[in-house]
Image 1: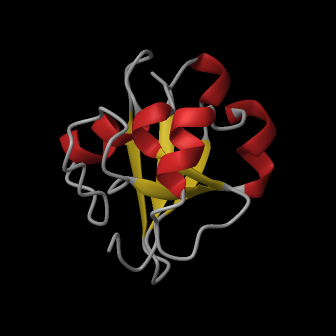
Image 2: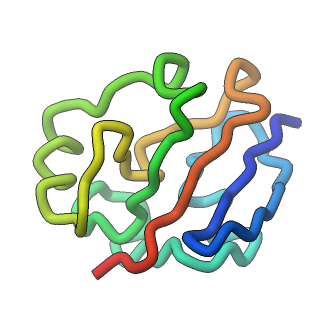
Length: 106
């Protein structure tokens, strides 16, 4: 099972095992990761699952599509590596993925 490491805004790491086909958002929610609110449940309509993909992983994860990019306009302090974790689907190629969480989703 692929592993995803979540790093909180204060540097605490939480490593979780994620079944392939699961979104990074669901991986966070299912494993009690603080910092991912997921108010819309993964519908790409609220931006409360904002994360920063570690620079070493941005190419493998890929870019946001147009709908996600529009939602990212609503996050606090968007960065070039900002993504909505509901739109990143874990697969074997993403084993070891590292995502950083913002200080707040609002």
